[in-house]
Structures are given as C-alpha cells and as structure tokens.
Amino acid sequence: MLTFDSMPVGAEMGRRELVLDDGLLGRWLRLFPDDADGDRMPAGMMAAVTMRAYAEILQPRPPGNVHGAQQFQVIRLPRLGERLVTALTCAGKELKRDRRWIDFATETTGTDGGVRFRGRMSILWAA
Image (cartoon, rainbow, N blue to C red; front, side, top):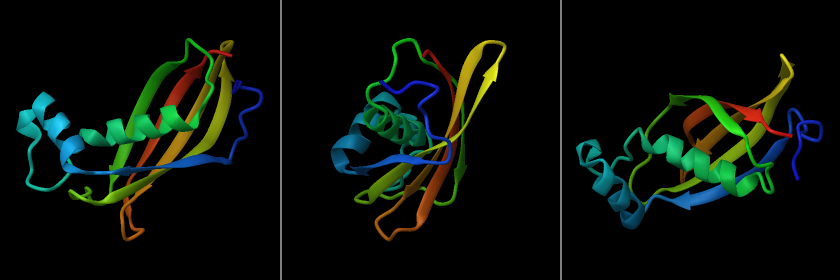
C-alpha cells in the first residue's frame, strides 16, 4: 500500500492513456448537456480525466483519503478523437497538525504531444 512515508516526492508515479471518443464524450453530455461545444472536450471533463488517471495509477491506496483541493491550467482543450496521456507526479508532502497532506501534479498531453492542461491536487492521505 502507498503510504505517506513511502511516497517519493518529485517522482513521476505513472502515466495513463485515454482516448476522447464519441462514447466518453456522449456519456458526459448526457449528464451535462449544456457543456456541448462542438468537438471540443468540455472543461469540466478535466477533473474526470485527471481523477481516472489518479485512481488507476495510485494502487493500492489506503482507505479514507480525502480530496482536499484541485485546480487546473488550461492550455488548449482536447478535441474529439485525441489520445490523451496524463502523467501524475508526487509534487510534495507535508505534515500539518498531525494530518498527512500530499500534493500531486498532473500534466495531460494530446495526440501531438502538446500539453492540453495541467493540474494540481491536494489529498489528505489516510496512512
């Protein structure tokens, strides 16, 4: 299990690929029909792409982690058909008032290798 003490600051934890296909975009738009923007991925999907990569890469995680904060920097929203690769890096960790906080940085690139968006999230780590 990945623990606070074993989490390597500065290390890339892994990468995950996701293709922005009709099925994925269609499922999102059934939930959020007002997000439709032609063949461009809705901005709200950045969190879904990032969290999917996080959940697949960081295994096994301790039960009880709490997602504390997340922010994104958009370079260019992906388009339908793009192959997205999200890299997850342990950007830092800190013990605050007996609570273990881990910061993760993400970078998602498109088919051409260009950056589409970057993210940062803080997780209250349970173990």
